[in-house]
Every structure is written in C-alpha cells, then in structure tokens.
Length: 145
Image (cartoon, rainbow, N blue to C red; front, side):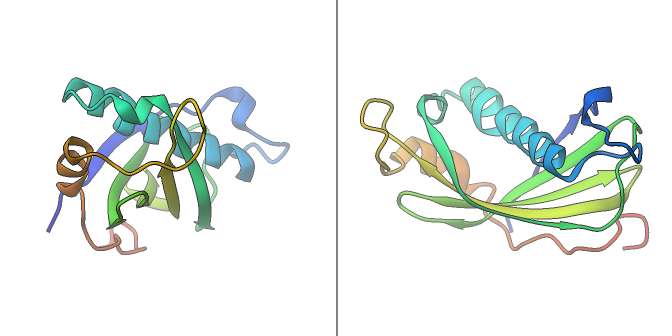
C-alpha cells in the first residue's frame, strides 16, 4: 500500500461566493495548488524536475460533500490510483477540521514543453510516483472513520 501526500492550502477571500463558501470552480484551484505543492515543489526536492516542464489535466471529477468556508486550514490528501507510461490518476480528499468536504480524481498527462504533445514518464519520475500508488481513499469523514 502506497503513501499519500498531504498538504494544506489557504482559502482566500476571493474564493468565496455570495453564500460565503468556496465557489465550486475555486475548489479546482485548491486542488491545483495542492497538486503543484506535491508534483512540482516536493518532487523537485527529490530531484524530479521534468514534471515542472509541462503537465496537463486530461480529466477531472469532483464530488462535493459539504461547503468549505474560511476555515483554516484546508487539508488535501493525494495519492495515485493509476500510473501509466504517459499518464497518472490522482485521487484527492479535501477536508476541513477532519471532515471530508470533497473527493476528486484527475488524470494528468506529462507533455513535452516544445511540442506540447504527451510524453512518457521517465524511470526517475515513475520511481518517485510509484511510492504514492494506492487504492482510492474512502469518501467518508476522517472523524467518523
């Protein structure tokens, strides 16, 4: 069983809608910030730099379970449910104070920075990513198990 990368993201005032909770489209931004922390910053600290050259979201699915307000912090837990030769599927759990607010999944494709065409993950990237390969996280509250 692989491990999950866990990070915290900050909700900004501009993320809120008229109902004073994070707008559904801004939830995508929270996922993006968490993913950049993991696949760009953390991976680079381990010498995995090519992911920063280009990666695109090919598919995104989100199940919203409860509103996210201005609570700080919002925690995003991520793992991989699939690792292909030229793509990966990221599983996300977004929680506030231990309660799941959203679960999501995205298919990411690394691309060549010059041609912007899909490229294969190299051996170093695959080795780094493989440690996060895990079944999808359950979609239940962390508090209530």
